[in-house]
Image 1 (cartoon, rainbow, N blue to C red):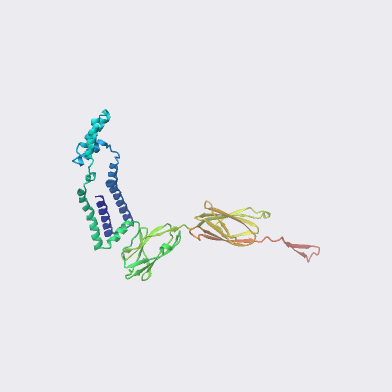
Image 2 (tube, rainbow, N blue to C red; image 1 turned 120 degrees about the vertical axis):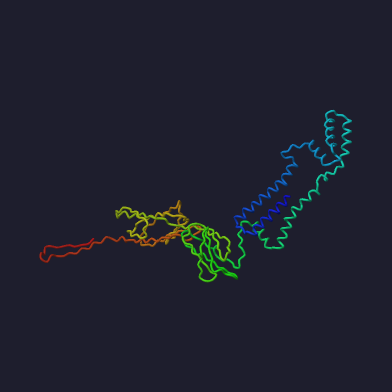
Length: 376
């Protein structure tokens, strides 16, 4: 009976899948429902009888056993239970006559065929319950060979199966990497005997029409991606398998500041500036940058070829400038090789030696008066 239920359930499940072509979610639910049914059949028709045989949670002594054997075998009837009662009395009184009677009764009980207790013929009627669904399944497989594929889809419940279309969906979406805040172009090519003129892309639960430059080739531009999405295509009433468009977080610079420490002999107070890409500083000025980052594993600074690793989304860099320099700051992480980048133009004002120029002029009217002019 249990086998019949399993066969019937699997046949019904395959039949419904053959007609409805369920998605992965419904097939997963139906598959685990079938597994629970199988476990229930095993528990009821196999485990429960075994527990009964080993007397689990059941008081089953020699008296009950002898009564059960007497009911199964007419030639035994009450002989076994009477023999057990005599044995109990003989153990108490130590009577030789009782022991002799017990041996006689035991000898008469020996040729009992216990295998006859199993009613094989009466159980044959249950075979038909297993044969009916098995026969129906075999007949359907002969008439419709595609029915076998529905059983395969039930077993592989978490795998997407495309409805056989007269064309193929071809895309490189599974090889592309989407980066946060950037734009990605999703291509699609349809190849086959019948090519639809329109194609659509499903991003999450939204449906968008794709642009076509020539027959059979489509594309869709996804702007400013912010999260990973499930994507699949539709054309001519057929759908493709589902793709996982995974989003890689972009390494970003959210802000930066620079602390300018001037040479002491200039007697200038230190100065802090923010988000300025070009600075003019006296020669010998030390600049300490503080960078605020996000999703950055490495920050490289050239032309010094220095690589920093931010901690708690912050890192710093210090350099003393003796000549004008163009600094380039690049960010990256383990998934994105090029994130935000910045350029800093540091213009250094040379510190020249002091120079004094003096010009002497005599007053033409008063010869004794001399004028001195100069620059320092």
